[in-house]
Image (cartoon, rainbow, N blue to C red; front, side, top):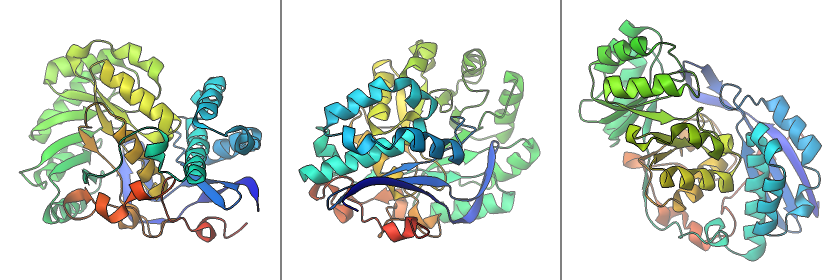
Length: 368
């Protein structure tokens, strides 16, 4: 194949089930896109989640079949990529995960053709410093929560994000088992409809919680604002903030909103950078998030977004690699180490072209 595009579903079991209020996941679920031009191969990843953007694997594939065929031949530069994304903005808004995969693959390919990293391609600082990730604990049983948190703490994690569920008594037991000397935020995954119910749940946990992510229906600014005032806790916006236009709902910086930026849900690296910069310009702090079970491609993409921030993110999620998935499409798998630290010296992305990942096509297109 001298030039062309193809895609495939990539799924494999997780090493442990991951549960939260919106989903119960036992396997990863991604659509991988490959762009080929000569000896260069660019890769991108879509993580469609119906409860986040409304997308499914079927809708992503349908979007790629309808709009992806001429992508390879129309993207010859960063300017051309930006122009295409702007021209198809409404399509990208409806299909952000699908376009994220196309965009990432394009950036990977352009970087390889120009012999430079994606950061260099975009005029961003090189990845030269180590990066620290958060521990993420699902809504498991009290015993499972205790075991996971003890393992995280034993290997040096100090920053934790913990999912909460509907059963307040169960959550009380779960949170008692968490280490005492951690920085703790919780994720409700749009669980509550009433501010009082959310407040009572958080108080019952009897822990020092500095922020809560998506406590109510996405975009419920009134309830989110009321909770901030009632609990003196910060609110993290995930499903409520997919694109820049939604920032207008959160113009009051006195509430100290926090934006959770995830590449797949926002339509790619470039749109994630634009959203993150606009959020910071509006007075928001930023967290760089991740989808459960994503491959090394999306973990790598989030590193690029981090290099574009004016201020460093409050936290980072992801880079689990084969710690969570039974197999990755990249060898070695991009993942954090002891203490949640990712080593820039180990990967040396600044010396590699494109995304700089060693992708194994046979792991993706084995049925093709």
